[in-house]
Length: 363
Picture 1 (cartoon, helix red, strand yellow):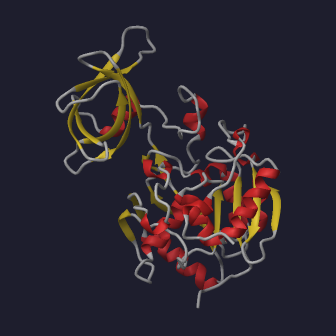
Picture 2 (picture 1 turned 180 degrees about the horizontal axis):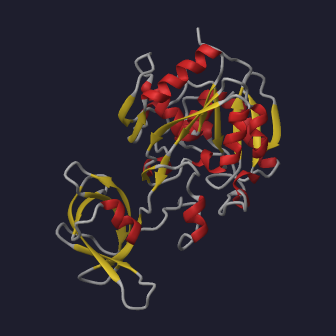
Picture 3 (picture 1 turned 60 degrees about the horizontal axis):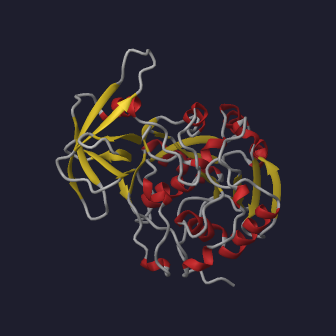
């Protein structure tokens, strides 16, 4: 039996050809591995079959964050050297938070020029960023020479920030649409809550037709979701912070679900972190703010009953969360089966539904 406290226990070998680097033609055409976390039984289905696992009074909770075009490219104004970076957010003072890479060493006070190619053939539009300061983790603060808000500027000068394992020089128009859930509403994420990428409005309508409800949370997925764990023991890992919000309407929906004997089904690990962060005191309540909750064994879940998720990177906090919910040995066995059955992995890959027979309120 693997030791759940050691990072090495959360490793597996994935053939490179199983990394899904492009979305399928249809969102709901992916496969669905269904794992009963009580028995370990596995079923191989299609995502279109998900509504058949939904019961009356169940509640699907989705993360309605919207991915922003946070990837930036340009050059150092003084030297012309190429610069690539990622927008991470804004400070309370309105400064941009950035990371980036270029040849040589950037200096405070230096300017970067971002270019937006003109489609009219008349010319190019540019944006100047002035670097202010850099912290110990390599994150810069910067200002721009524009009065427009940062979302407007990112729409002009940014592109979709695809995960690092999708080795494409630049995102396609298909990426701009498909690396986004159909219900994305609130902009702020630099990575997609990928479990939700499979849903179409029709699938959600089918779930509602079976007596389920749908509620929302917001967690703006940050760069930390791709950062590997760099320590041997999980209790030594420092978790990244992400902003999230649980509204009163979703708290009320969860309460009604419990009273009716339904299940709270989290769509994605980001939804799990939001719900469990809001219940950290032992009582579920509306929550707005930063969370650095690292869900690892022997964590006891307070809110969720089932989890829909994608297949995650080895040695990642997301895989640790899944294993905490479903059992490490069962998850590793399910991943071994998925590899043997040639499931597609990671952001554009197939899905996994972890559930069991328990319904109703927790004791």
